[in-house]
Length: 245
Image (cartoon, rainbow, N blue to C red; front, side):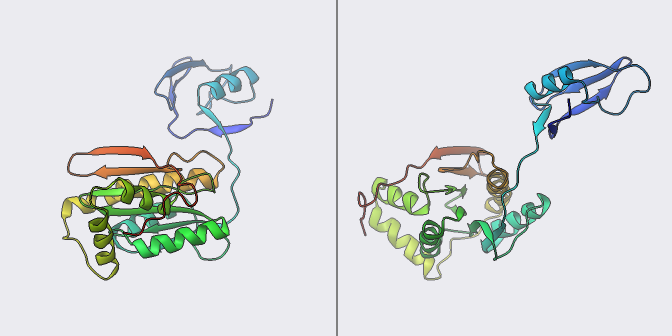
């Protein structure tokens, strides 16, 4: 049997007298006996029974197929820098031609920009992720991957509908769009790396045909408490919520 995958990230092969102690990605242990003769650094996968067990335990994973296209990164601020750095570390090319995913990030909400990009994404079908800071938290998502998932416009409408101060919230976004800026804070800047990791993990999963955890979900990270909260954002049916405070 030819190997049908590769060793998963996080797997460790600890040499023992008789073979290996395998520490799996799920933090379990497997004991594998070495074949006769010289022991390689890792167990050989030409044994179908061994390959099957490794696949079941998450030690062996399929090689993902890569979607064509690049990542277009739009925005500014610390989250822009953090996302760009992690995209490079993940081997994901950035550009503006043959775009498969667009990532729009900012140091605070850019309501006009985000709404425009959301409309463009729905027209072109290009996946779209968001990230920004608001108050003392960094937010990632929702990640829009198609008509059945929520995008920024859905998030915006639901926030206005749920807010006890919809007019004030809309005025706050308009102030930011006109050049206003919140007070800076050192603790808030530290959270950008967490939001960037969530965004890039989603982008990598999407580009490799895997389920992205942030699809239709907004995650909020509070550096002051270390808490990360995630909540689903449901798409708004067309024409149901068209308020304009």
